[in-house]
Length: 180
Image (cartoon, rainbow, N blue to C red; front, side, top):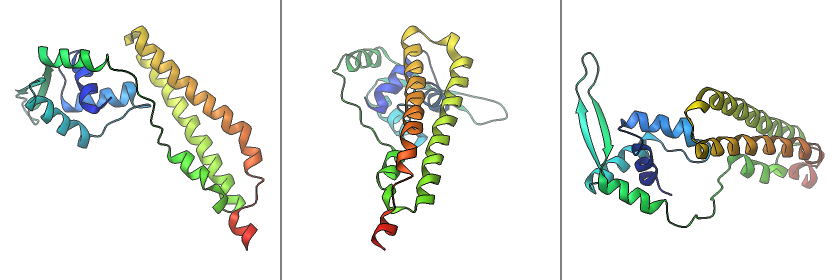
């Protein structure tokens, strides 16, 4: 699913500013799909050009005016059609896995530090996800709750897997040590 479709989904809940949409990405689906302002604002312009959203400028005293976006009837229909399309296989992009993949090129100490760093990052993400879930859970419908619980389960599983496999990985000789 692309950024434009997700924005339509968020706007189906009510009007939002670009900042509100960024917060919605970060605070709801950010673990499995995030978007920067650099992706959100061009998508909003395109959605407006296509007649799928409208915008309204709200004058504010003492601060910059706020632009609020609202989904149109056509936008609701496009969103409804898009969420009916077949589910595509997930695309996994993981900086952590790429660094682990090339871990043999590090010294044993660097390998250990990298793996501990990976584990600590996953633990931090789990702690943040649990805290956000607890804070926001009363606002979730059963489908949103499912996604949050999936995220927490995924992080817990990743942590358990790292804890299980780390002892074997840190015992392997580094490429530079083996070839030197």
